[in-house]
Image 1 (tube, rainbow, N blue to C red):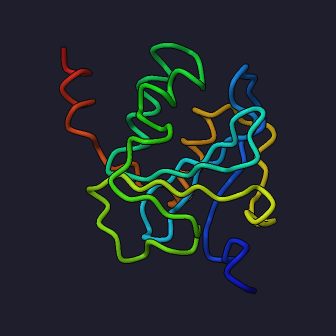
Image 2: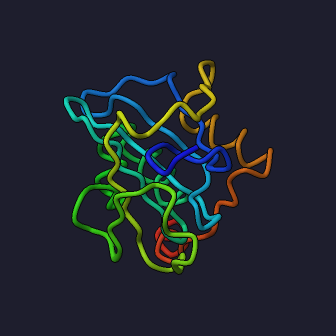
Image 3: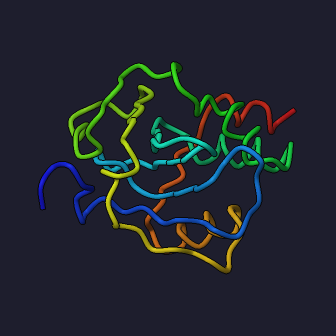
Length: 151
């Protein structure tokens, strides 16, 4: 497989059981550096944006459960363009990058490849629980979210 498509060891799972006015496609899984990843294709976009940072899943879950909106949860979790410490255009790169920094990949959908398993029966929160039980998501804690939940 060449580097224009996603390598087979990149583990992403497409969640289809949701509706959103801003999000067309949503994936959860593991980034090339082995940490949790969220990827999104915004409506009317030809690109897939994928993100990873320590506590990304717990942050997304907190905001999704708070506002009940995929798009708002993505925005509040800073999963939108221009919030990252590193910007990569090849989804296969980044294995050596520190997970304490936010990494953003921007990949044209045409080069994203056919690499995922669709999770058609689960909503995003149930998909995260299932992927966590399988050991695919590690769900690192986020100190900020831990403090907010404690209040």
